[in-house]
Image (cartoon, rainbow, N blue to C red; front, side, top):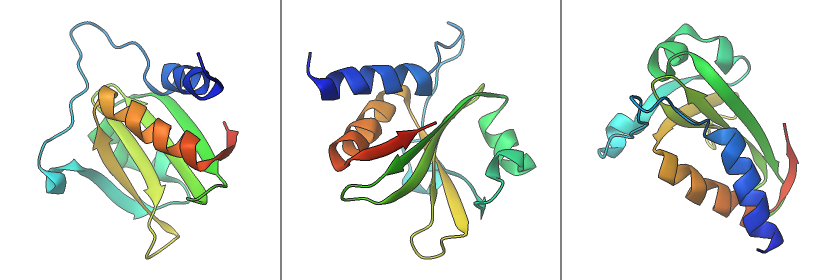
Length: 121
């Protein structure tokens, strides 16, 4: 196993908690429906609309990248959905939460690890 594969396995375990067998994370196929929330980036975890969309929070992983894609993003797991939260490129104090399937988390993490990570919290 390579260092990158090992890092992806560890990050994936934090980002995608084992759901109850009756709960399956699914992301809508229509791109327009994938946006779960838009709002101020400063305190997105405290936003009631985001919490209603994602459900009760079970994990939140913050990733800072310093490679090709410099910036901060979060993988947020809730009882209803998984989401990728990232500051808007056009309006940095603004953030978007995009629905992800459990399988998509792996590809998002692979692109981040490939670009370079400086810190995960």
